[in-house]
Image 1: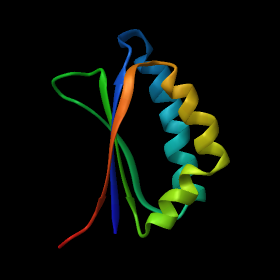
Image 2: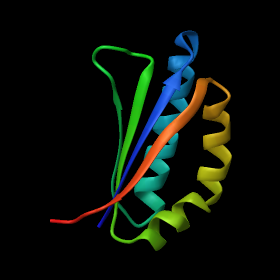
Image 3: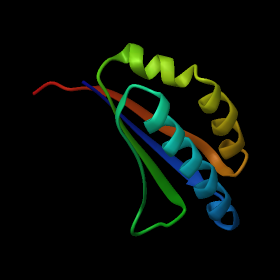
Length: 95
């Protein structure tokens, strides 16, 4: 089991645009990719921090997702509206 925690730092005036793109990414990923969970959250203390939490059966499933057309199309668009580069952790389940 693989978990991905991707912390994104949105430009304050671009949150709505990022959420619009993220919604498309989530819906398409859940429909087309072999994902278990794919959800976006907003930090309670800092609404400019958007966190994508993903769950995959294998690293290969994650790699396939990151190579998909929808990922390669949507993520660069989202990155245009970020204040800085995302922080991403890829974790394997231990227990």
